[in-house]
Length: 461
Ligand code: PNW
Image 1: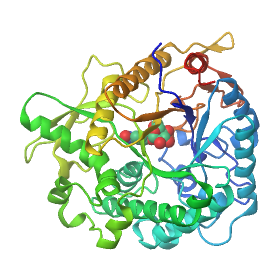
Image 2: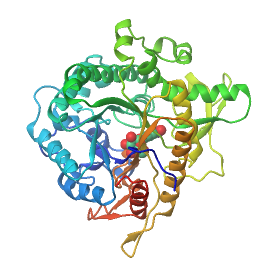
Image 3: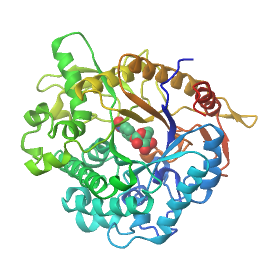
Image 4: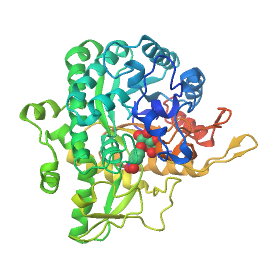
């Protein structure tokens, strides 16, 4: 077993809408995923998060399971509409009380809370009344919400993540329309993304100015990025792979590290790409204390000339195709997960090295990596060999990247337990813990035992 550095953080991750349930309890307001999943045709089998894993009521049981499997850190998200039912105004005491109970329970079990402020569940009132992330004022409203959270929880929470996967919100929410709020526009996706970046930076400024000096924590943004390897060794395909990563990741992270969008995006998107003012550039640049990365898969990228077509078989065009002219394909020999996402551990290694080089070796935390695998209960147990093999491969790739100089400091497995997998519903099982969604009984899978063993062997428990 390879040893990870001292203080390497082992954790697991979830998000509010995917696990909490209690959608009409505790003074919570509706959010855009409540609305979207109750709209006919939007989710597989019309599944929704009304009850999900009922974590809102069973959080103690869930924390006990985390402690049992040796987790040292747990990443969860706060549902904005539990804190401010309409997204603005007074804080709802019951919402604050729920997250206080959860945080205290984690700390009592020696588990560090890592908190995401926005994992896609925008209060519905902000969407209906203000157009949500299309409205620049939502950046201010978000900073107000963040302030409430820092003030209420920051004495105990030392790791904050502003946004989860702005690319997913922008592309799947505003371009493909397959996620909430379900819009389809090749202009709105860039505008929403722009406001998500500025909202992150405003919240980080609130933290840095008014809370960090006394609370001493860290704040960052989490972005998703799959790896793109050139399909052939032609220079055109090398450029296509690079362009594809810039449209997926550097879109969000170049502003954080350099203060502006990648040149290739400015050139290709033209006036549909908003411009940062000088003041915004200064606000955004340097606004992340760490590089949060969610990573799931790898694909080959090939250049497509003008007039060609994207030959993608996985989740649409993986971006605005007409702006990129990149076709994505998978090697037919690659194993695929239940999401049809190829399992390619070396892609994570290459991505970590790409990030380290481009951004001058920032501290990186993998805030999500994992896989959906079919599982079956046999004699009250779930044997989980494919997920265990996946984790072995991806953790080895992390180790290799560290050996080659990447400053990777932690790994959070997606996900703690099977949950509401957004538009795919409950059939896609990412968890280390099996949930029977009829009875809500929790059964740790073999992967949970394996994870505990890895943590123990690394002296982390
Ligand atoms: C992430 N893509 O979603 C989210 O942060 C989780 O909430 C989710 O459950 C998990 O990954 C598994 O899907 C993604 O299309 C959804 O590239 C879609 C994509 C990437 C991440």
